[in-house]
Length: 237
Image (cartoon, rainbow, N blue to C red; front, top):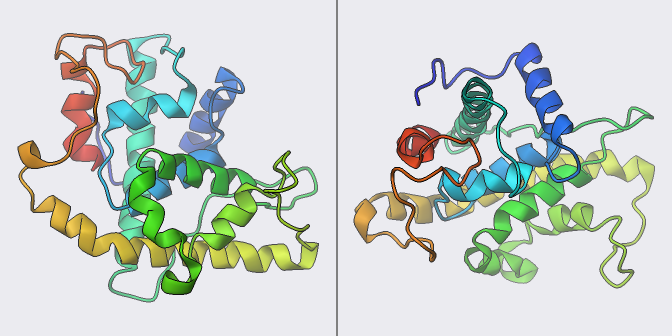
């Protein structure tokens, strides 16, 4: 499967089309804000995660596309948004720049950031052990603290739920969240560079049954694996 203009940011129409698609799936799917946080974690983190592993988390294990045309359209939009985030974060390595997360507004017009933070943590969970060193706020300055605070703001467990966030402090927290993403991306850059120098066949692989090239792709597209994620992996990453 090939796509054109994979480095072009989504237009407003394409953004809306992808958001509507995710909304049509139901509660099993991420919304666009959570998707943005999820991709940010996968891109900023230390390890490569292949599309066949991370895509099913976006829409749920039981989902399948209605047609080949829909699969090509949606996967193309996802790849372009991934590449937009990756390009924006790459800029932060050489200049004072931040990637502005995609945050949806509630009925009162307030961007809360909870879904973005929860999406980010879902991305972390795919390689949880690789993130442990950043959980020490004393040693590494705690770039995950704000993200975790927003992710658990409405947690049903009062032991996990943080103190209420004053309305006047939320915007400051969202700014700090964006800055934390830059710090995380820069922190793991040496690890990503080292991993890129390791021959692909020698890199750690996900444990599990091998997917045959002619088997259905686990991303849910309905296409054969050889024509879907296995072919797209170099473009996405």
